[in-house]
Length: 269
Image (cartoon, rainbow, N blue to C red):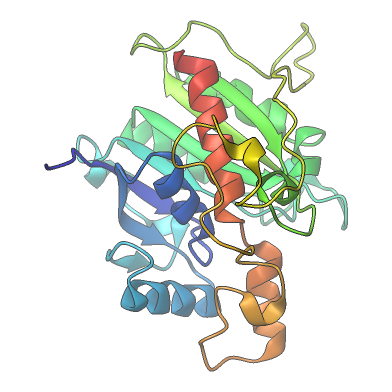
């Protein structure tokens, strides 16, 4: 039986962990048709993952700032990306929009040009305190209802915390709830309002996974990012520092799958 696939653009793709998570969370119904990644090591990891068959085969564009989003209008349903965390990280200058690595204005322009039905983004947890309000209000201003959640790798069986913020925007009037989750108060301060059941650090064989939506049970016996040697770049001929950078910036796919499911449920159920 054939499955209808929903094409999307993968931007700031990194090593592809977020894409793997979206694939799992959607039950294999989404597929990237183009990756955008400028870091050479991350792009090489994407190529390796494609060759290994763990990621969908698609071309890789090297620069978000020159990517022609308009050419994909009507060709894709979504945009997925883990845009740079340095402007929002708790470690660093915390410059937000003033940071030269801040890419949201380019992403916002790309969304307006491509006009996807939905967008799904990932960033560090501190983004909730710095910059998230602007991103959520930007999405809302473009006609998207917004859901956001904080999720950790521990919740899907990993032995480390790795908390991340995930943001879903869904075009209002297309079967989603007419509301914005994550923006409260007239000041635009952000908050996570969804209450999730406790699923703290138990593995794929734990009976508490019984009843969890299909496809969200941990699919690996250990996290892709448990140790450096287990990282998504371990089969590449690259140095330890490059592997650490890939892993440090990476997304645990099962965490992304859990967040994907919860955000979709919040907006569409």
